[in-house]
Length: 147
Image 1 (cartoon, rainbow, N blue to C red):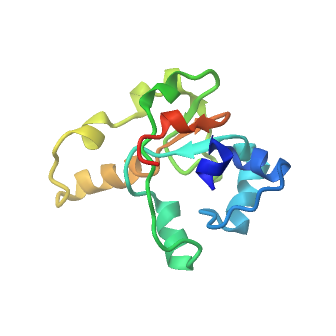
Image 2 (spheres, rainbow, N blue to C red; image 1 turned 30 degrees about the vertical axis):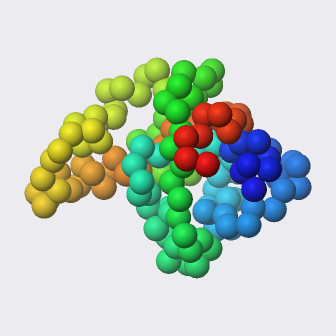
């Protein structure tokens, strides 16, 4: 479906186009929370090939085979991109412009070898897996490496 549409679209745009997503990551509650916070206006990206919402979607049976798409990092330079240091639609979580996010991102945990058996390191990793980059418009196919 992503190929047919020409890229990844924010959920709100898919809804406007009356596109039925065959394997939605979010359940009805999640979609309602996204709509309430305006998060449906963004494509949600994560830094790692794990995310708590993906885990829940697999457990609920909404998705079976997960493919984490590799998005070109240049999307973070697009106008209007935002960041959250937790699941974006969670109560109390606020998004910030991506240009202000650097102090909040645990680059060591994301990009260096660490001892995940250490409970403090594991807690940092668990938090980093919740990070979301929010892109306010379509991500065209040319920016998706593995599709």
